Length: 566
Image 1 (spheres, helix red, strand yellow):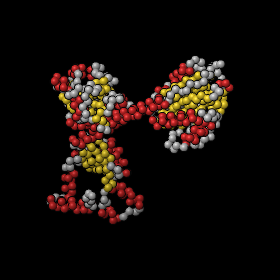
Image 2 (cartoon, rainbow, N blue to C red):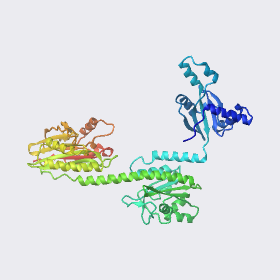
Image 3 (tube, rainbow, N blue to C red):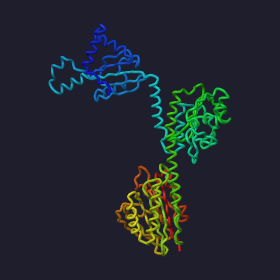
Image 4 (cartoon, helix red, strand yellow):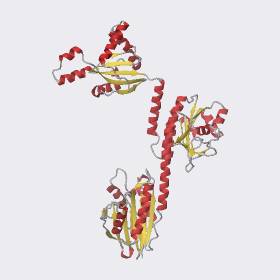
C-alpha cells in the first residue's frame, strides 16, 4: 500500500519548519517554490477570477490569463460544479484543470453560519480552480502519437468484413501520413496456412491494395494492380521480413541497394523514377499465421526512424487482425454458401400440367447466406405441393436447419394431408428440438384439374397472383405463427387458379428494406408490371430487376408456377 497523504495541518507545520531552518519567511519560501516550478500554475477563485499565474504558465501558454483559453474557461466552470478534473492540449502544452478546496480561515470558522444556506455559500467561496500546464517529454509525446494513430486506425481500418476493402483502408491510411507509397500483398484465397517466420519460398502473394501520393500516381499505373500476383524472391526486403517475422527497413541509395531490396527490374525502375529512397517491409500476421506483407516507401531523404518503425509495426498488427477477421468470415460464409447450394437442389419435376421456375440469390449486403428454401412435392391425381420457407438467422446453422425442415416436410407431405395439417405436424416436430430455429413457411397445393389452389401460411409473406392484363394481386391469407413455436392454429384458404395465371412465392429478402414499412414494400411489389405470358424465367428476371436485389439485406428465394393450358 502507498504512503498516506499527511493532513493539511502537518503539511503546514512542515513548511514552517523548512522556512525556519532555511532562515526565510514562509510566504517567501512558498512564492519561490511556485514561481520556479518547471510547470505552469494558475489559480482562479470561486467566481473564476484569475488570482495568480506563474512565469512558466505564461511561457508555455503565451497568456497571463487562463480564461482566454476557451477550453480552460469551459472546463473551469464544470470542474467547480462537479469536482471532476479535465485534461486537454493547448498548443504544445498539456493542461489539467482541477478544483481546489481551501480550508476556512480560523477566525472565520469560529463565527459560525447563520444558516445551512450561508454555509454552502461560504464553502463555494472557499473553492477555487487550479490550472496546471506542462510539456511532455519526448517519450510521452511519442506514446501519445502512437495511441492517437492506433485510435484513428481503429476507426478507419476494418470497417467491413471484406478483405479487399480492409486492405485498401490500410494502404490509404498510411499515405501520406507515414509514407508516399504503400502496397498490401496477401496470401491468395485457398492458399494453405503459412506459419509466421517460415520462408515464403516460391509462393506468390496477391496484390490487394496500392496507394500513393498524387505525385506518384503516374508510377502507380505501372506497378502490379490489385488482383495480380506478385513474387518476392529470397533475399528481397519483403522475403527477409516474412522469414524473420519482423520489420525490415532499407535505404535505397544505390543501384545495388535497389537490386537487393526489390525482386524484379520493373519494380526497381518504378522506384527509381519515383525517387524512392527508403523502404519498409513488415509482415502482416495474426494468431500465429502469416497473412501477407505491408510495404511502405518514401521519396526524398526521409528514412524510417526506430520510433516510426515501432509505431507502424503496432499499426500493422492491428490491421492484420482486421484482415484475419475478414478472412475467417469469408471462409465461414463460403462454406455456408456451398452447403446451401448443395442442399438447395432444384425442385422435383412437377406434373406435366404445371410449369415451374425458381431462383435463389444470396444477400447483397451483410450476410452471404441464410436459411431460405423452396420445394415442390408431386402428389397423386396430378396435384403438386409448392413450398417456400425462411429459417431465421444466417450462416451454416441456418442452412443445416433448412435442410432438416425440408426433409421433414417431404416426409409429412407424403401422407397426403391438407396444407394446414402439414404445417401443424411440422410445427410439432420442430418444436420438440429446443435448439431449432423458428421458420416461416407457405404451402400452396395446386390442383389443375379443379382450377384451384389451397394455401396455408406459417407467418410467411402473402403470395402474388399474376393474371394477364390485370394488376398483380397479393393474396390475403390467414397466417399462423412460425414453425417451431409449438402453438399451432394454422388455417387454410382455397382460391381459384386458372390456366395462364402465375403464382409467385417469395421470401422477405425480395421486398423488405431498412427504414421502410413492410406494407409499403408489398405495395411496391404489387405495382410491378409483371409479364404473365412467356417464359417464367423472364418473369423472375423482371421481378429481380425491379426490386434491385443488390440492396437486399436478406437472401431472396423465388418460386413461380403456372398451370399449363390443356
